[in-house]
Amino acid sequence: MSRTRLRIGGRAVRSAAAALAALLLLTGCLYPGDEQATRPAGIKEAVRNVQSAIDQYMEDTRMLPIKNATRDTPLYEKFVIDFAKLKRTGYMSALPAVSYEEGGHYYFLVIDEETDPLVKLMDLRIAQQINDIQSWVDGYMAAHNGEVPKGDQAYPDFYYIDYERMNKKSPTIVSPYSNAPIQAIVHDNGTVFADYGIDIMQTLQRESNGSAEALPDDLRRLLVDRYDFVPVKGPAYRLAGGEPQAVLP
Picture 1 (tube, rainbow, N blue to C red):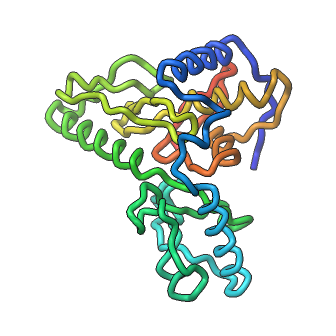
Picture 2: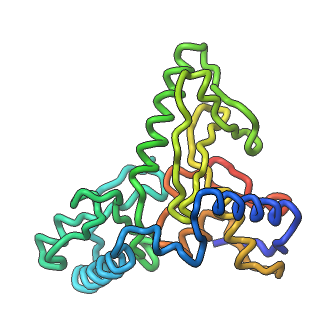
């Protein structure tokens, strides 16, 4: 993977980190020290157990127990674990309580499937919220000659959504990383995304300490490498002027 070396710690990053800190105080969230208290019990243990089952299955079969996905399936929604296969073949006796299959809020996915397969979680609540907003935007655009219901600009070609124009109430989307509210944004082409820019910015600020660091081309990878969750329905991000900037994936 191509990487960029950059110095982090500019004024924009510091301002964003301060804004997030204030938001966390207002919402009563303690991050990162209290992050596990905001997670469903047993998530980390569930990920470890599924990872162990995946590793053993691969060692025995040289295959991954994943469901089929199309070429167009987004990167962080693509390889959903086939729990029925794992259970049927004896690699798991019980499924994780937090899994969708057991009534939970998460799909268990495999990423880096061709190199070092890792188990991660996809928050289905965020996926559903973005899908709902997408349907509102599509309906508005169909009724208004393709006009996108956009408000203020969030990034070049990306905008916050004007819910009032659609006669909708702005939903509360909760980040799986900070447990704080994040916003949906819409591209000029009408595609809706969840904006993880503030999570990425806060991660950069906390971990770089102002020193040079090798960064992935797509900054979503920072979140994937450090947490159990994928940034579902998020755009890709590049670093521009010391800040994460959304781009089409």
